[in-house]
Amino acid sequence: MIFSKACEYGIRASAYIALRSLDKKRASLKDISLEVGSPEAYTAKILQMLVRGGIIKSIKGAAGGFEIESKKMDRIKIEDIVLAIDGGFNDKICVLGLKECSQKHPCPVHHKYKHIKSDLKAMLQNTSLQEMSTGLKEGHTCLNF
Image 1 (cartoon, rainbow, N blue to C red):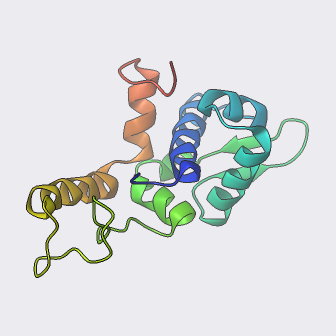
Image 2: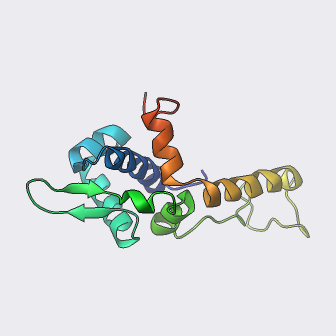
């Protein structure tokens, strides 16, 4: 598992909130929970982490909900969401779960997997919420089945 379940939900929730924000609408906790397939109470905790991490904004009141400023969407990368929820991407973890895996002491797949980890790290650093939400809006990508 590359990310915690909370982080997976957080990435999907952020993309959904960004999609709604593109249409100048706020997303409710209930809608987010349904869209990402997470229980409401668990989703609420994840959203709190995203608010504290500066990824999303929480607006209280009858017309409240969650939103992301459109001018920030291009600057918010998946890496920022992972940092807010999981504390960052740990590219030192062995894919086979070994306690020690490095150039000096490689696991049987270390040399093949290190390139994948490098590509994954680059994707996290370079993929913005703008890109994710635009793909959703245009129907090229989806969050659920």
